[in-house]
Image 1 (spheres, helix red, strand yellow):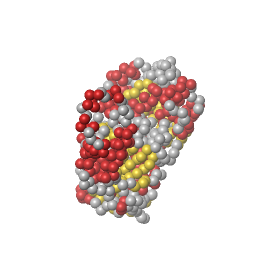
Image 2: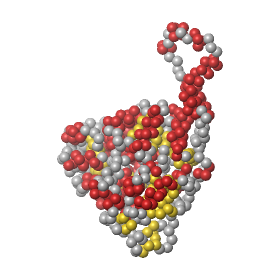
Image 3: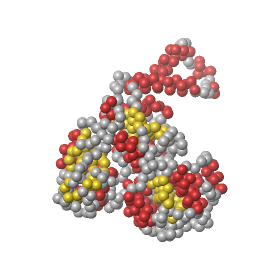
Image 4: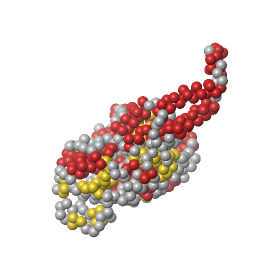
Length: 588
């Protein structure tokens, strides 16, 4: 592929033998053509090597100025890219790589930059801070890589990325890698890239074919018990990530699992960088086998050999399901993506199946007797396979075991197994069946009568995306975010909520205004297949003007400011200044 011997030597040392499709498509282009690249590839497909290996080969080792800049959304991903580039350059003396990100000592990062770093890997916020202190100089940057670009936009970094790019030379090369291609990505590409070559590996949002997608349907109150049942049944074979929707839930479930004797820990935005690195180090070395994490915190987790990804709740955005699942079955291995599905979420599986081109298989939460039988089998196999170290014992040990020696084999075995299973027997004694009814067996049935769908007359044209729309609805209504599921369309949106929250949502949402236009919210019917309201013919907007239907929605002008102070979605949509809204910027 045209790579230098020193890079091939490093690749061989790392154990890689064959390039992935994105590497095969990108590396020759970056080495030979000088063109910009717009790459569409899922998480876990080897994007770091796709841009990192050519980037290293094109560097001038004797030039200590910053020649390449890699921008990514999270600290974990920043660290991961930096580690990979360091490994790739292990036989290239004189190459310095600096990782700069928030939550770590700025002074140490400034010292690293002053020593001279040909490559800077950075998160947007910390990079801008260092630029304002004149600690970073980008005048000689010849290549900029934007990794996980769609996630940077989802996290509100669009303006930051544009600000950073404005300080780089006009003649630089730009490589943009993303799992999805929303319009904002296209706009940045058009503004900052020159006739980029588009490289697409796999279908957008498509799932890894080596992943088995399974789900079990349970009632909300039984989710934690069902999770424990699955972990007990899987036993030491489980090495994976359990995804939760909020930082609070992540910490809460992790604490419960630890209290109940499970080998778990958690990763979320409230942890310090030192805490995060300690947790990740323990997870990589399998000192921790169960990791609880939020979507954002898990970005950059590149741990080989994960067997499972568990969705404690389905994510609001389908692409996030693909991102989550992609943490397992990496580098050609197989894995399981398992969803603990609430009864009222069942119809959403059809949406994911259609857009991610996957098929779900329904499984049953194992019963108490099945778990006990599995624990017994695992324990006996562990004993049978255990090597005996004679040096650990002395004759005195056996002399003190006359009571055991006097027992027959069957009695000793029964006593040992009783001790091992005692805790589990207590947990599962008279434990009920945790599986919900068969009405959700196909994954497309309508949600239960305990929840309702609300149509809301605002959408993407008003500056909303999934994350900030959910924030806004929760803020104005007082309903907890974890009890809401939202779907944001072009000019309208849907909110799925528990029955007890519907009245509060309708009352508060119908009082909001955007650009002098009253927001309209009403309960609507949903179809099992689409989960969306159908409109026919022409309608009349809240300000009295006719508007024509377009793709199931309505044409109208985007929100441009003004209106009720509590209803300014523009300030949620990718902007850093939240002061004018009265809301605090949230971390995800």
